[in-house]
Image (cartoon, each protein chain N blue to C red):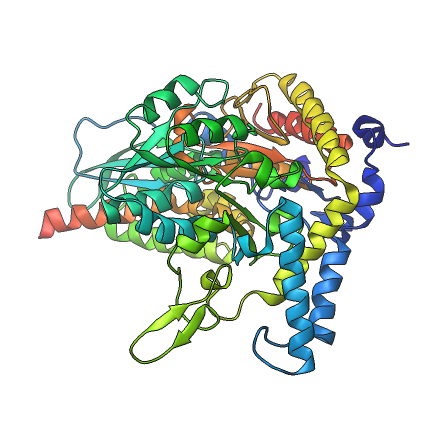
Length: 150
Length: 414
C-alpha cells in the first residue's frame, strides 16, 4: 500500500499532522478567521500578527481534523511568515487552483512544499480538507487589510 | 465450501456474489471490497435487467393512456405495489410510492403532521435518528408550534426506556418517530414494545425502516405500526423509489402532499377533490421503471429468504465485532444487545476521513463522517467515525481484509 498512498499521504503531510510547527495561540492578534466543515467536524482557527507594513510576522493555528487538514494549515504557516498580505493572497489562489487541477504551479518556490497536496485533487471529497485553512486565510487577510487601510 | 458459507449456515454467498456484476470490478487495481451497503446497496443483475427491459419493451406513462403499452406498464407498476404490500403484510391501498425514506417522512410530516397535530402536542424522536427522521420534525415544530422531544439512548446505544416514560408522561406526545435500526450504532430498536408503549399513551408511531428492512422480515400488522418507511436503493433496488406504508384509516384522513396529475378525483377552476389513497399522495408521473425495479429486488431477496439473510448478518456481525475489537486503538461505537451489520468505529488519533481514504487505496469502501446523524456522534463524544456495513454479498473474508487494511493504514501514521 505504501507506494499507492504516496501521492496523497506524503511523508511531509504525515509529519506535520503528527507534530505541527505552528500549532498554538498568539498573544497579540491583528487578524484571525475560523473555518468549519460540518460534514466531518474539521475546524481551523488561524491567527496572524503583522509587522511593518502588510508583512506577516507571526502566525499560529488551532486545527482539529484529519491529517490533510492539519498539515495544510501548518504548511500555510510556513508560507505566510515574512510575506506581504498581497503575496499570500496570490499563493492562496494558486493553492486552490492546484487542488482543483492537480497541477503544481510553475515558477513558485513556495510550492516546493505545497506540491505535497497536489494528490488531493484525485479525491473530490477531500478537497475541502486541504483548502479549509486557505479559505480561512483569505478571510483573515481581507479583515486585516480592511482594518489597516479602511 | 467457503469460509463465508460455513459461517452463514444456509446462505451461499459466493453464488449470491455472482448475481452482482459490480462486485467483479477492481478499485485502484485491487478487488473491490464493498462495505458501504448501509449507504446504498449494490444491484443484482435481475434488477438491472428488468429495468432495461421495462424501457426497451413495455414503457409508457401509467394510469393514462388507453393503449396497450400504457396498460402493460401500469400492470407492471401496480404489480410492484402488490409485491411491496405482500412484502410488508399490508394492503395495496396502504402502499404509497415515494422517492425514498426521507420523502416518506416529509410526506407524513406535511400531511399527518399539519392536519392532526396542533400547538401543545409533541412529536418524539430518539437520539439515534438519521437526520431524515429529525429535520422534518424540526421543520414541523417551527411551522406548527408543536414541541419536539428527544428520547435518550443509553451508553451502549439502546433506547433509554426510563427517559421514554418521562417524555411521554404528560401524554402530549402524539407521534413517536423512531428508527428500526440505527445507521450508525447498528442497534435494532424493540419496535413492538415501543409501539405498545406509544399506543397506550395515545401516540401514533412512524418507524424509519431504511436500514432494518434490508436484514429482517418486516410485518407491519405484527409490529402494529402506523407508518413504516424505507428506500428502494438500500434494498438492492434502484434509487429514486421508496415506500410509505400508512395504516389505511390514517392515510384516508390525511390531506394530499403534492398537488398535480394523478392525485385528484375531479378538477374544476373553482375546486378539486382528491383521489383515494395511495394515489392521493402520488402526484405527477411516478418513478415507473424504478418501482418495477424495486418489485424485482423484493422478489430477489424473498427468493433468498429472510431466515438465511438474518443468519448471515448475525454471523458477519459477530465475526466483525470479534475481529475489529481485537485491533489496538480501535473503538466500536455502541454495543447494543440486539445489533446488526453496521459497525462504526474510531481509531486512536487517526481521523475517520484518513481511515476511509487509506482503506479506499486498498480497494475497501467504507463511509466516514457523522453519517447524517450529527447529534448522535456528539452524544458519543466524537465528530466522525468510519463505518463498515454489510449486505447479503459480504463475506467474512472481506471483514478480515478490512481488519488487515486497518492494521496497514496504522503503519502509515506510526
